[in-house]
Image (tube, rainbow over the protein chains, first blue to last red):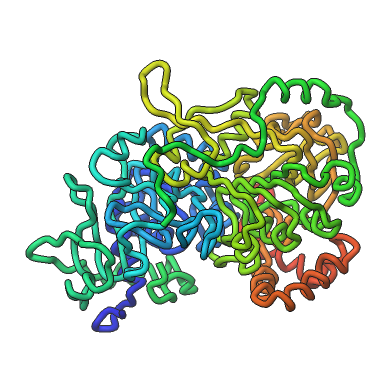
Length: 264
Length: 334
């Protein structure tokens, strides 16, 4: 789905929406792809002092180009520190990392993510996926977890095949009962159809706003579980011309991320 | 979805013993002699990597990986290796191509970060021939740290409540001070660790530049340690700037000089990754027959890593990758 007046693409809308969620003077562990474009855009607009960390050890780089690997040289240019993975992960565990951005093959109404396997038999998966990587650590230990996903029924499922990464597990109190740090968990989901968050009491996924041109029915038809909707239902703010210019000219001039069609 | 056990009890197999006294006995007998440890990759693999060993690789998938050793493991058709699949991408792609492993601790395998998934590694892992246990990057990395510290486990706050924990071989414990629920991740002492470094002397003192990922702990946790290095430098280099030493020589069993040793991955401050060749791997993997021919050309049919480098375009291509590297050492700045 392209922005209805063709001023911007869906990916550009998602990247800008993601950037809006990040506050200035905060820390964020970021992976490669659309979340990094969002963090770099935030740095060039509303959050100039956002501290970007990479799980392999790079801290506060000034990036010249979008990295392919979270450990590569492109994450390390003009950094303040070339550290280690334990340095970054221990900062998360200590409570010093505010945001992280994750994705996955499946998500459920409590924001649990699957990136390990598709199927019902762990020993014989239908599809073997990479596994947690740093995802479980970041979602367990950072204060606020942001998630980007393609909004499809096969991805927004009643129960994920494998909880690679904990959301609110099976509901209120479950993270704390499992021993996870209090007051952590999924914060927002930026999907290809909507901006979503989690009800503070029930911990269930709810729609915050619909992307321009998307209807409530579109979202319901593409979600495998019951979502909560506010009334009235706002529209996700459109990217400004300034944001689009910075995104296209400074963040991703080669179109590596924004050239893709909503492949979150 | 996988069967949910109501009790959140991890049930994965523990492939390596976290027995710290056994590790101490091993390290007690490990040579501290300051001897010339230079070996060819062939010699180092023959001497220090045996069928059935548990292997761990430094770097991060396509960044600072010891490709020459990985190729040699495949070329010499090692069998039944255990593997620590920590941030593994192209390194795992190579090992899966040779089908050399039969058990794997996984935090990240099969995937190639933004480059997608390895079709052959997927087929291999879906075949049921590899026993797997799940971890997170920090969970598995902290297992090296426990081993490096010489303690049998570390209490951590990650993986709790997830299926990643349930399919791991960690244990739930209670904090004796506060009663808080914690996860004990067991020390992991690999039989052999292999790390690619920027520079080493002939004894094994080594410098890593750029992010170290988990390699400082891995070097200390490994029973045997093979280094491949971009270059050999004088020991005086370490004595002059000792704070820059990443690995001291007494941890090291072999030093192999392998310029461009992380190719087709990147080496921070040296050369960038060869995206064209990495894409060629993924493309060839789509069809098993094509892939067999591809492996014959680049691994089984080559005598060593130099022949591989010659095949992919030799010095000309490598110099191009060197020019494209975004990280410059400060003394190189204009």
